[in-house]
Image 1 (tube, helix red, strand yellow):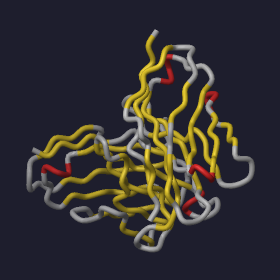
Image 2: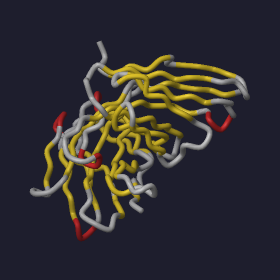
Image 3: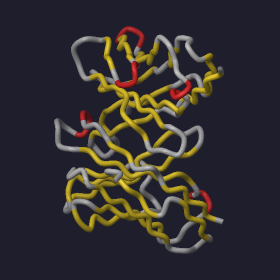
Image 4: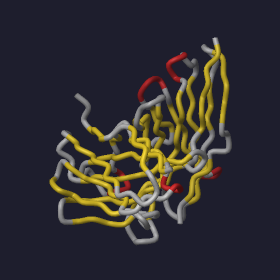
Length: 116
Length: 116
């Protein structure tokens, strides 16, 4: 079984709908991240969480919210989806070795979201 | 703020040929540098990372990278590519975000195609 799983893997939704992307991990890591990937732009950090009580904004958090329900679960929500949120979304985890900058991140397989 | 440039969007090489993928970074202090690979339909996987010490870093799958401070570069190399190396490759640098926390900044990626 995969260490980092994401559900759903693909989702098509309409403008204005609320949508939640879920991430679960069995690696026992404290740190979890949400990224979006757009062609030609690489990966950009949306939110990250160092533990259940610690959640931080990334570089592109507007229009998104997150919930860290447990050490193993980190959900990303789009309260009112818009077409420019169409992207590939990745969840990642890392452990506590060193500071954030030195952590190796482990990625899920991604969720392809299309907002019509 | 840190940044990463991968000047080659797409590279095609013949199976068995050597490979070099370019990465240039901008960061005010000593950088932490990473190369990740994304196979089709998969999440990102760490190939190698550089924190300090020997400037030639060995990674998985026969890849290596060389840190050159004078050129602000961290190029990825492989002496002989295999068809299974076809993927997208991302260089990343760790540094301080606008919010004061360390984070990874990814390049826009280089897509590698292998021809027989």
